[in-house]
Image 1 (cartoon, rainbow, N blue to C red):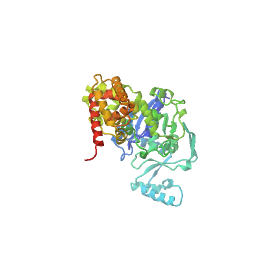
Image 2 (cartoon, one colour; image 1 turned 180 degrees about the vertical axis):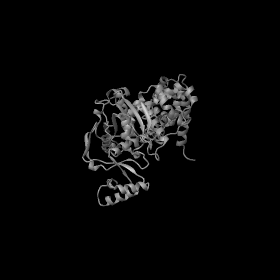
Image 3 (cartoon, rainbow, N blue to C red; image 1 turned 120 degrees about the vertical axis):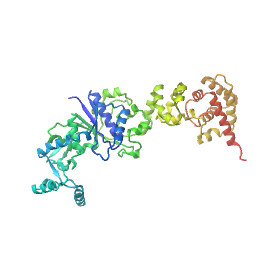
Image 4 (spheres, one colour; image 1 turned 90 degrees about the horizontal axis):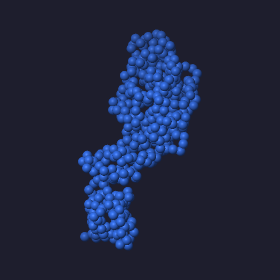
Length: 483
């Protein structure tokens, strides 16, 4: 049988990092085995599900580049399947009706827990007499359908953790259908996976406890269960479960923060999986070729944002000019720095600017802060930069001399500007840095940045002279004694 895998998120929230990694592992496994990757939306929780969340899930998968082979399928559109399968179990005597109300169950649970005894359903409705049951039916008492857990133990071979088993006495008789005939998670999951011919269920460790219930259902329905593989959870740097307090956790948040999808997937796949060699940067094609669950670690992975930033920066630095522009443009437009007019008239200049900035960028959003001074009329000076490079004695006169020297240049090319600046430094008897640092602050407002002479070349003669003049006036004003 060919490999068929699925992800089955609930549309009660956005696609978060853990589900994104699970989706990626499923997708890679399917592609490696020429199999089928399926999306199933588990939307039986009507009150909390929303179309907006479904759109967010699809948008996230598209951004990650995880193309679907089938789906999305919606459980809410398959509600006729579950009562039919439940009827089979009822005929076999593997389930029974439960008339207990949530209030009754809560009260009984409180009494048991108060005595220090772990709670599980006490099978009260299993011992109802025929007369009691008929009376409840005549009164139209709402009823759920519970699975009767057999004696013994349940075990399975986990594709990541090896053999796992559990005593059935630890598993309570769980509900399959609620009183409105809507299925619970475990029952719907089994029915859907069987009907969709899923061969491998790949999901997080938090589902291990569900697996025992699902295997019991497969046996009761006389259906061969799929193989189960459970991925260790992703933890924050404090080794607690990844949550909002660790920063963004939804895929769209990371997209909006300026991460590239290839970089994000490369980072995600290394959370709990190893390529088996000292190699961190892997293309989709390479991942598909070598991916297997033999290299999945059985311990939790740490989500290291600093490493993600570093990796994303490496991917940014490898982008060709046009690809970089396409990736960065939405962020520049959102910040109001670039419009269609600039894009059409100064496209080549814009490509050069981005190429100059990319070595220092960790995220696509960094280009806004790193290069804002290229797009605005007047820069704001960083206070530390002013104190360090505008506060020296004689800096104003040195900048005046530099401005006058550059203003006389007919050839305002990179090499001629550098020659002029270094020649002036020799004339003034100072190191070139005494001119380089102040002019950088004058042009950008910042202490650090790209190569100065490439910066001046892209800034152009007119803007360079204008900003030097503004800096000179600023220094004179700051150094003048108060009146």
